Length: 152
Image (cartoon, rainbow, N blue to C red; front, top):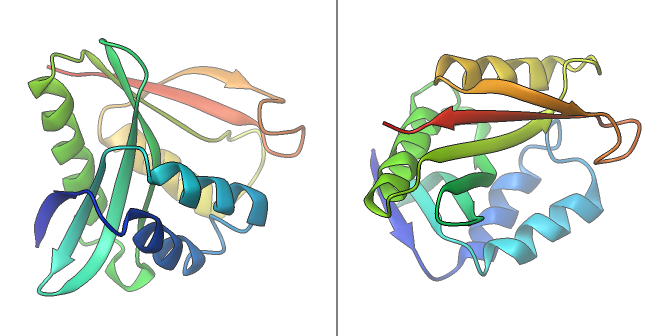
């Protein structure tokens, strides 16, 4: 597996992978926003040979904090260390630029969803800590959990 930053075809890669993950990205308006917004954000991909297996897009909020804007791994590559490698690459990218924090928003546990339970466990295993729940940020049916990781 290789991880690299890319500057071209970001929207297409994002769309291809997110559309293959409807359990996580089934709201068309949100999906379209992610696709469009990746065009202007740093983006990293994982590859096996010539196959793109996953991606991560960052939002750089300020001189201290970057956020995982959106990430996805093709389902057949889940549980193979790709997500962890993408997050670690992002952490290195941020540390090189003197950022101190990496944040992410995901579905809160106050809405039962097995897929997002896996997502939360993934982030917690990587050292993220929950900071706050926003019950209406994404609408009342999609409560948001805000997590943070201090970068060392």
